[in-house]
Image (cartoon, rainbow, N blue to C red):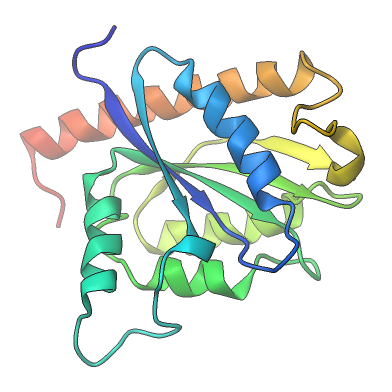
Length: 189
């Protein structure tokens, strides 16, 4: 299916210098680009000049960022786990939008140490519930992520992560179509 493709924003949640986020995000984006129903917008927070808090007046960067969120039919957040939580710049970016998140599905790719980012993902589910977004149940998780990828940025295990990504993406497509149709029939308020 190439008509009526869904636009998915893949949000790279870490901005730290020396981060591993782009390795994970680039791999996941490549998986997502293989899905015939999706068009991908990779939103790397390290490359977007956003204010740390909502500014008194909108800036062009803020308008550009929220326009990208608004244009998306759904999202996948790629997040590390730092100190049992998700990164502060990710929370700041989430808080810069509101209506742009509403009634849209959000999936998660977590990575980190022993928990594989799952504690950060569980916290993000609460944040997105408050924004009236729908979180996708299945996730992709990389435990001890640095050791799971080769020098070219591909997982050593090529089948498990790819299968998990397919499940997540198929669920995201279902929810994105369902919520889009619902918004068309009856605006959310």
